[in-house]
Structures are given as C-alpha cells and as structure tokens.
Image (cartoon, rainbow, N blue to C red; front, side):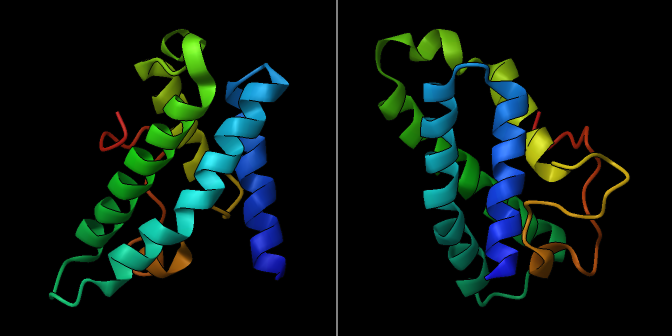
Length: 127
C-alpha cells in the first residue's frame, strides 16, 4: 500500500512539473495511473528469455502509448497544443526520476530495473 501511495505521489509530482492547468494535470495523472499496471503485467507476462533492458523498453513503450492515447482522448479539442512531442518527452523523463536525479525512487517498477539500474534522465529511448 505504501509503495502505491509513493508511486501516485511521484506520478503527480511529474505531471505537475510538466502541466500547469489543474484539469489537464488530473486527466494526464489518471491516464498514467490507469495504464501503469497493464503495461507492467504485459512486460512481466512475456516468458521469452529477454534482456532486462528489452523488458524495460516493452513496459515503457506500452505505458507511453496507452497513457498518451488515453490522455489524447480525455483532453479534447486543445490536445494538439497540450500534448506536443516535447511535452511528452519531458513528462516521461520526469517519471524516470520524479524526485530528482539524486533520489533513488523511479516510477519505473523496481522489478524491471533492479539488475540494470534506473535509466538516465536523458535516456534516448524516451526521446
């Protein structure tokens, strides 16, 4: 339960750092929250022998695609001004290290990075 609370706080901090409008923050937060577990389950259900980095990329790809698609639908007519490529990159980079680079917590599930470590803030996979 505490892990979920910390994750929610971290997601909120990342969203708040990228979006100013409270309605937008709420919609993007909800999108990230609702798609997180599905992306993790998908990455962990893959029983093929895959490198840790590949499994991490599978999680991130699914989480980014699903949460941004959900956000896109929720934000309505202004979405093209709000969800620019730059904004999406900033959002997911913030989710990698929501409390800053010196804090060890990441919104990326620990099970995916315990062997390889947290990706850098400028991880080129995100953008």
